[in-house]
Length: 174
Image 1 (cartoon, rainbow, N blue to C red):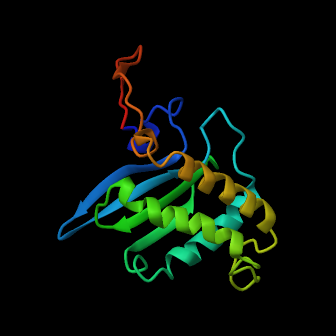
Image 2 (image 1 turned 45 degrees about the vertical axis):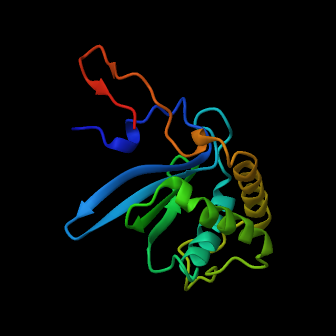
């Protein structure tokens, strides 16, 4: 089977940031998947599962209620590796264009008093939430974004050489 694009990015070189993972043209419109990376893969501890779950609920709710962006949001959800989130939007904006939205969303987490959608009727595992840790991770990432706003590396996947494995398979960067 052909390796999917998100597995073909050199994860040893990714830093936290906002990246375009892929753009799919669907006839009359396009859909773009963004990699919102909070942790350096394979170098930093991953995000606590309960905090990740809370961040998913809080930020998904925020994005789907943001007056400017709510009609563009298709999906917000955690990466399986627990180092970040995927954001899928209608259209094709640059990661820099998302900077303000992502920063506001992560700053918003600190104001939340209760994680939305945490009843047994609303959530598949409503007991697995940690609001205080979610706030800690959100504040850490927001501070990082602010400190690195002029660093183009937080908006572009790192370039890597095109490697060829021993069996001739190509390893592509983004």
